[in-house]
Amino acid sequence: MSEQAEFLKREQSIFSIERNKAQATQADETVEPLQLGQRVKEIRQTRKLTLEEVSKLTGLSRSAISKIENDQISPTFAAVTKLVNGLGIDIPQLFSPAKGKLAAVGRRDVTLNGMGKPHPTPTYEHELLASELTGKKMIPYRTTICARSFDDFHDWVRHEGEEFLLVLSGQVNLYTEFYQPVELNEGDSAYYDAEMGHAVVSTSEDDAVILWVTA
Image: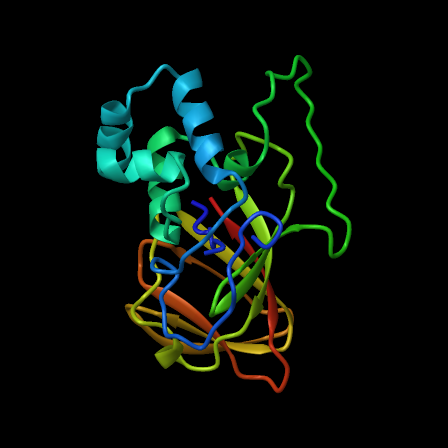
């Protein structure tokens, strides 16, 4: 995934959520992306899927999907992840209009500094990069690590896929379910199975910033 991505944020013009001090895992963080319900319904109808069929693909109840489509509830990050995985799309596709298939084989997307799509959460402040490209095989995002202790997470963060992180500034502790915590400094990196429980906390004076790539 992107999962984490997908970490994954796991968007303020896209996701409308306020940062608070409540303990929460990435799977339980509430996101309120702009017109998400309308986009989910559009994707479902374009693929000629019924609510029942989407329910079977995603593991979400028919009722929950209907409420999401009609903006009656704000989906959790876990629900967004299930929609993404079940429908075979990536997170940015939920927040951009459907586009026709490109005739050219070459694709490119440039994200200027600070112009990525924000996805703030209580523990991480994600900035999605290359968000205009659909059907990507990986999801890159820059993340400011707000968490200062593993206790800031209710439980391990886990999602499908593999993940790579590179520390851009500051210092972090990388917690992984089957290994001892490891300290990473600017320029250090790690690659791991994202289905294994993981979490990252800042240990430097300022919040650390990392590049995350989820596939």
